[in-house]
Length: 291
Image (cartoon, rainbow, N blue to C red; front, side, top):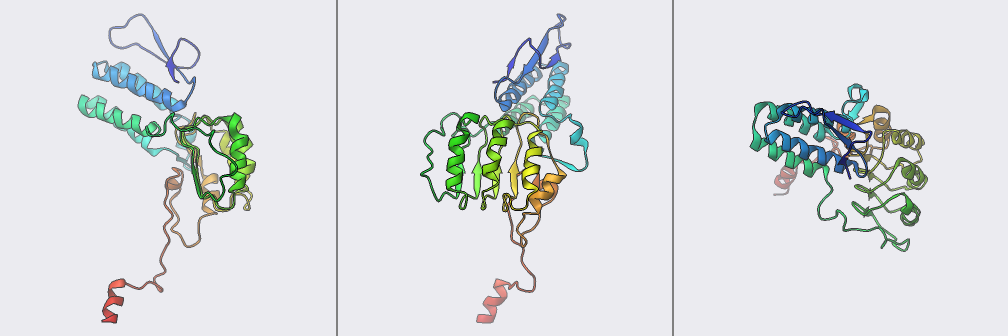
């Protein structure tokens, strides 16, 4: 979990309020990245509600760094935020802090924490151990909050191998997958012919893992139906590069409305079939013709 420590890490010097001892707050990722972010939001809220606006503003600036929103890639016109809501929450908290609206600020912090946290119904309650390669014919597999780590990937690969022709949705969010673990899983994922969406939110992934995804998906035969990848709330992945967006769009159903790159980067896009105007029949007109 994310804790305050006097060790190397991203820190904020407390120079506001009445504290003149030069004490540092060190925020270090020692576990789930989302837990660290939640800890920082709680600290910000505590300082803001006690009137320590300058120190709270420092913490908020630090939160932007922890969420990788200060990375140069964020300003790249050919890259798109994977979690637009987080950027919006931070902007609104900054505004509420300046407006000195404690009630709204506390509510916004609560909503921000909910956004970053896994669903309470699954967090720490679901385990991957029950899964078996005997599970066949699965169309969707949700392992959100299943405490899945790199050591259990061999078992997961066997399950995916047994369902590679039927599984369309795979949810691996809020687990403990690292870049190395995902690299080991990619050879299995690229063989999944029906997979449409892959949820990797809230793991331990770094932005270097995107290179592996781009490399795999550069082959048109790999993951031929994969149109959505969710990467938010990982270690330092703030954006999806335009190249990966293009590879996803290349797999988009030909008769579906293509989303904007900004929408696609969030991994939360619904496929909507377009209607050919020439073939479209207004149901009301058809009903009148039948009378």
